[in-house]
Length: 564
Image 1 (cartoon, rainbow, N blue to C red):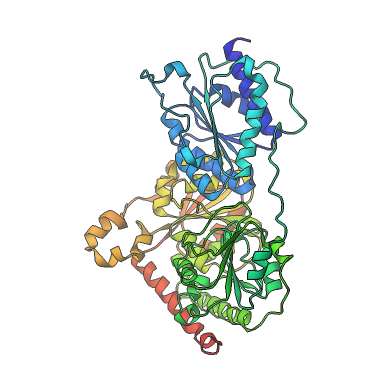
Image 2: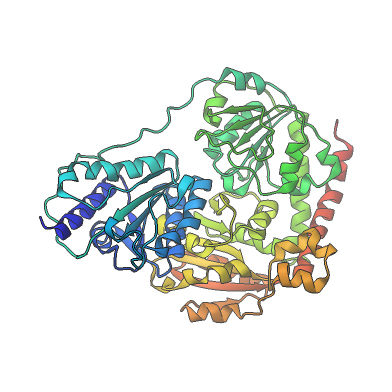
């Protein structure tokens, strides 16, 4: 074969082997050097085109987040490849499988000032689970082609996390694929999932306390197993919405952030804490856990060390199901009942202020609570980092039929819209994304061509004309207002509806609760739409304070009659 046909055959083999391994989607950004790869992907996968490589990377991340399978994101060479770095970092931090495939110039064009040529091998450093550059494809190396492709998927799933494959191509870039190396019925390599952990006698011994607590975050494991373990132990579960455990269940405490701001509740002391999955975003929860003197067991089957406060006394790979098989069943007592009464009182207090027809029905906490309640059954609520994910975490009531996702690996606000588009593309579920105005402006390019995509996506933008989260920080009180506004408040004064319209996406201003509820319900319908809720940063701080005060008053009786 001539060199261009070899390149075409190599890429066809990669794409074929990825498809055998279960990869169904690829996201590509336009470019010349990636031509052999894009042509091969187009023949065997669903391909989604994004103009901006950064947004393409986040869209592929969203597909992986929704499906648990890696998506390919393919770029041309040079700074186009560099633009993938934010999504690769997020995939690494959040444990999301991703195949970042960057086209490159051949070796003879490096270090001589050739255009669109940068050092791409090892570009993503420690963020990549595995990086490989096979060099320019040669016919003599075709016996390794399927192995390389299959290992990419196996490494991405074993982490899980991002894999970087850097592919140099020589011109001419168009060729015809010949006969491919013979494959196997399944993928050439497949990484077996970790063996289910057996009994963990050390952990089982630690968990014999009567007054224990389960703290469930994203990646906590099967919700049924988590709640089954909680019932067996007779313990409450502080359930982050991203854990999947925030269900209508007697063991579940959803209002943990508000409750632990109440000194009387914060004084309650468990004998042991079992932490499953990622930490909550709430500083009230993390600060309380950091101040406990009791043993804390950190469980993560993937072996991630999610312990920012360094309080874990024991780390185990045993998940909730395995732990349930090793602990002694006990009847629930006063400790669980105390948390149940506090949760009931807190939810009633929040509802009295945030529900429809109540004083704060269109405040930022109410918008988050309404989005959590109003996302269509079986749908996904994607919450942006910064205030939206916190408001969903703090004020979202328990419900079934909802998956809550967020980019809480590196916690950035970049790529939010494109990740949500990827979630909707990969999971094919009605999707509501809740984000602030700055995150919307930062990632508005993700709306380009959105109307062409076969998704169901309703985008709720809370517009407080700036960085609302900073109004909660000491800077807002201690600095001169004009200085604070310039560097932290950052008002933009942009018409967000006009921005959406410029990208061909219809936008509406949601002036009341009825409009908001109708808008979240619209996620069940095909298409992409933007709804904007106006807010005020100072009013938002006051609303949060009012809610916390109401919860404190509501749980006063529970605290007063609790046994220390």
